Amino acid sequence: MRLTLYTSAFCGPCMATRAVVAEAGRLIPGAQVVEKDVVRDEAEAAAAGIRSTPTVVVTDASGAEVFRAEGVPTLNQVLAAAAKAV
Image 1: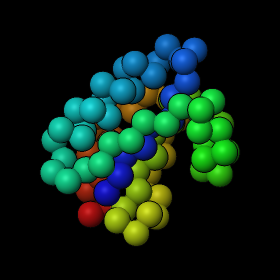
Image 2: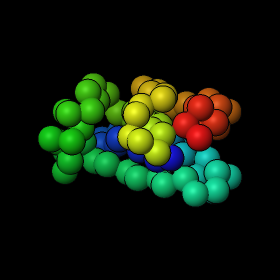
Image 3: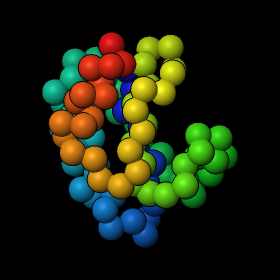
Image 4: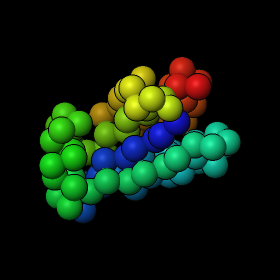
């Protein structure tokens, strides 16, 4: 399972989202946490349909998206989504 956080340098809420995703990654055994900057990784962000930052995308082992949150998700939202991904 993968937790991908799409951020940008000018994004204030990204810091809070980064903390939520990091805590979820710490609590979920085997979770892969990846952060992508929408400017540096523009093609990947566009392919993923990222329209705003922060955006968190949770994918299962096959790469299928099971959750997407634009804005700052709660830890409980990310953990519930992660449960769907296993």
